[in-house]
Figure: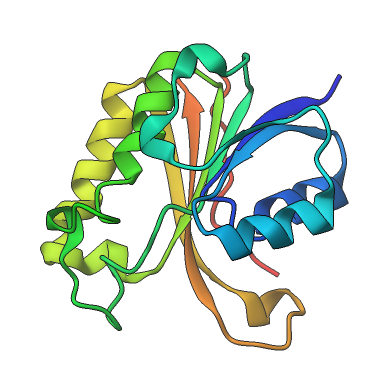
Length: 181
C-alpha cells in the first residue's frame, strides 16, 4: 500500500522526484499556478488520471480524494531575507500557508511535509513562524523542523531550506530531526 500525497505549490516537482525515488508514494494530484512550471511538471511526470488545480485558493476540498500526505513548498518570497519580507501582509503570496492549513483541516492527512526559506524562522522576530506552528498545533499536528543544506546531501550547490514535518496527533509522531549526514 502506498502513501497517497497531494503536491501543493509543486513547481517542477522537487518533492515528487524525491518521494518517487524513495518509493512507496503515489501522487494523486498537484497544484501549481505558474504556467511554465506546470508545463515542465507535466512534461516530466506525465500525470494521467491525477487531479490538477491551478490556484490553491480555489481548491474545493470536496474535490480532493483522501490523502495521507500534503507536500507543500509554499511561496517563500514574503519571508526571504532577499525580498521585502512583507510576510502575512503580502496577500498575493504571504498568506498561502493558510491554504495548506485549510486543506489539512478538511482532509486530515496524517502527515505534512513543508518547505520554505530559513528566513521564515526570523521573520517578524519569530512571530510568523510561531503563527505557523500554532496553526498546525490547533489542527492537531505535532511538528518537527530543521534547516538543511543541499550541499550536505551530495548536491553540488549550497541551498539552505527549512523543512517542517507534521504528524497528526493520533500516535504516529516520531523523531525525524535532527537529520545528519
